[in-house]
Length: 170
Image (cartoon, rainbow, N blue to C red; front, side, top):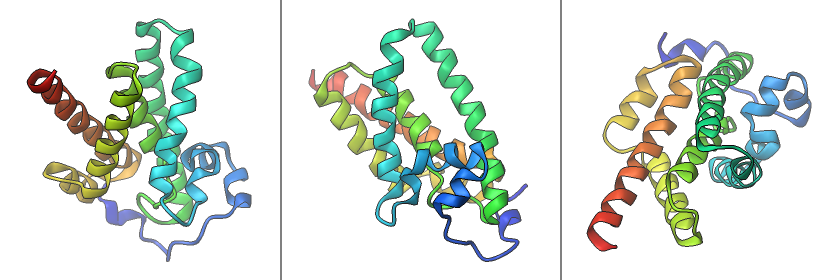
């Protein structure tokens, strides 16, 4: 299924009423952060921080990794359902993809402010810039999986740059 499948009607501006009409919409829009007119992806990424801070200390690494797999799979469903309801693939307000991807970054890096800020900045850079294969994935992989996948690759690029930084500098 291509990304163009969702262009059934002009995209509408979602409202709080839309978010509350189905749990998938509320989750896909990052509990409301995706409604922001300015930088919904950045706000969605920031939502990952308190979720991580609440969940990570309460779980072993194995259980946290399972939580992330479940969140990714759940994100596919919420993105698919919400994209269809809006009639557009990867609406800018859908931010669960940023939330889950940045939670992966937070899980994989040292738990210090410097690393977390660097991770945040790099992740936002790769998510906005969409270098190399990210832009291709974003344009060609449809459905909820496509929405989630490009941010997963942005998280991977972030982790690769941070690993190189650690190996070369630290």
